[in-house]
Image 1 (cartoon, rainbow, N blue to C red):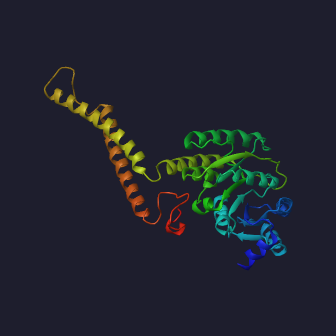
Image 2 (cartoon, one colour):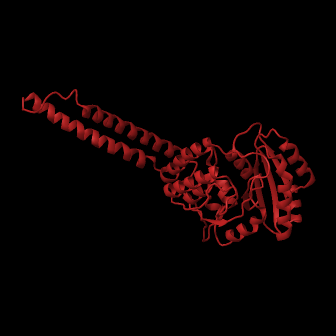
Length: 339
């Protein structure tokens, strides 16, 4: 509490803004990044706190973060015992953030801290999430082309059309980051998840700089993981509260065609038993195998769908499936827990 009070006295703005910076072996850029953030804070009268999350770095990043925190009360640091990934780093930073507005930015200096005021202007227009758009991206072609393909897939499958879902510079209202639970590689889908919860999402063009220090963490494995995570997010946002609608629908279709095939084969078997010309044994027909597989698949998908619905029904007791934007009337806001 004393720490926050001292920060509020320092900052000319009334609202505290938290800037979360995940760092994995980014020691050469951390001090310069802090200088850029404080320059923006002083030039625009912003009350900022800077939270570095050391994601298991081995290059001395934590020592630099500790020095920055010792020199400035507005700097805080979180250190992981090992590398857990960017989603975990952001989740830890979001949990520790005290500001009513939360930024995330990368530690490699490719994101420009000068864009913070511009994103705040967009947030003031009533949006809950402001996503950066690297319109002129300073990355090699083997990163840009897969990223464009990935963005189009996300737009197609989620319905939220953004130019750059994976931009490292994003801005949120605090209620957004407190509600979203990150794991795996879901950090790139925060705007998608927020949009599915009813929050207003927009994007603004931001400057992007070439990498000056360290090495890129990008690889082919990230594109594969991203595609699998996209499938996960598409399912969770579309059918997370009604899995039987998807699984049961697939099961009913498979069961219908499998049953139709078995009915046809049953008719053929009866006609063969009656020695009708043109009809013979059905045991060697591929349709029999396909029909049986369809019936079995249908039962399995329906069973999985019912089990998923049971899990949702049990978990829904502690987590509501709705999101309240605001309330009015005689009752206080505390009477309506925000989820």
